[in-house]
Image 1 (cartoon, rainbow, N blue to C red):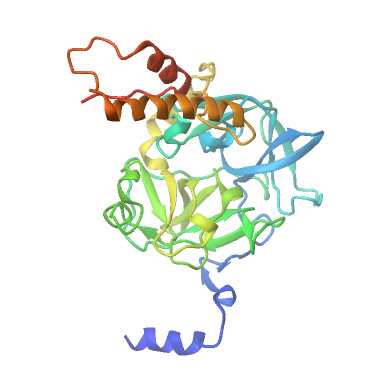
Image 2 (cartoon, rainbow, N blue to C red; image 1 turned 90 degrees about the horizontal axis):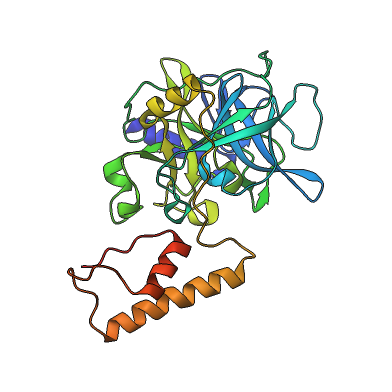
Length: 327
């Protein structure tokens, strides 16, 4: 109790953004990372309008394989990863830019329910060269679930004061246990056991461009990638709304099987229900969806003996890639 009071007195008069502390040599508190202090961190970039744009983070797990979130690569595009990156717009001489030649999504991932199984493996066109600036990430042991308030760090180029960061950031995000995160006052039932929550303290959660990036947690003095950023807090900084990460320890068998079978088939994702800019498709599907349910509210819904739902609604379902279970 005395230590808590002392800490409160020491921090009095400082804004939250000024609060910093040290963990295993890493200074944290939403700060600029020391160059190349996270050598397994990658910048996932997409080629648009003749320029490469950073969209997500990721982790180098083998010299030719990167782990990231499936929603980061949910549409056909030209991707590359940049290893040894620190400042997105400066060449520091440590960068390795390598094209992505294959994207493998988890077979159960569906962007309509994007949090679940939000994991993908990227095969690189050439092997990365390991050095002081580029190293392989260490993954956790199978089935590991960290305790509540376990101290972890998120790294990435997410938004900072409303603007995307250009220098690699790091911030403390203590773990929120599953029973707390899945409670009504937090994330409710959308959080499954194959996910891990962290942050949500109203101070320094991650933001959109941190997606796919690692949740780094120290185990016996070594940082392991225990999560992949899947969903952040609304507004990037909301109390009781922790970030949601794909729990890596749940997918180790899937990852290892892919690495042992490098000819694994490229699994195409489901077509997302809605993409920004696709207003006509969104409107058509919305009208079809709500028309069916509005009519169902006034008419008797299909009974369990009904062999098939109406033809028009079957077309809606095929477009939306979603199954409706009738009671």
